[in-house]
Length: 207
Ligand code: TYD
Image (cartoon, rainbow, N blue to C red; front, side):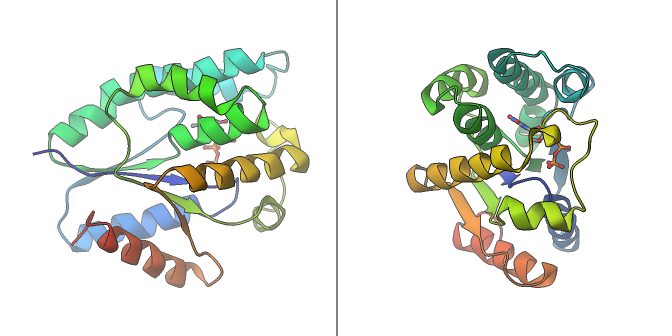
């Protein structure tokens, strides 16, 4: 039996961690076995790639190197964590996945969605999430919730203009991918959680 695969996406500070915790608590109560993991990272080697790609001192990293490192981390994470968990019938909840690469590297960095799809398609094979939930909060609001950017993080150093492009990139992806859905986040965290549960039920991912 194959488990279900759920990914969370959104701009920095959109509240992914909070919503992932609430979903995990919900699955606990429903006795659904699950694994929570994250990208880039999630396994020993993939976490080493994470440190490299997010290190604020690596200012000269090329955009293409960055895109390939995210894809490399994804490959390792899939084989170490995601595929074994799905094969064991567990639900996988992943904090960020390929839509981050499409929005950040493909759109905001300008490498092109086709190029980023191509390098990731080879890595992911059939392992696309059953549903990717986009926490729809504009970066202007998300950053202020987060009380500003982390100065040691290469991606957060990019500034608001970059993060506005990331948001546009996500919006573009929403138009073409039926398994990528925006979550209404205008209410409080409990209301957003209820919206997520409703979406997961509607799509037949949870009972
Ligand atoms: P993280 O600290 O996990 O960010 P957040 O808490 O906002 O999720 O750092 C991950 C960073 O890496 C984040 O800025 C998004 C970026 N990223 C990409 O640019 N491409 C990718 O494929 C992935 C998975 C993440």
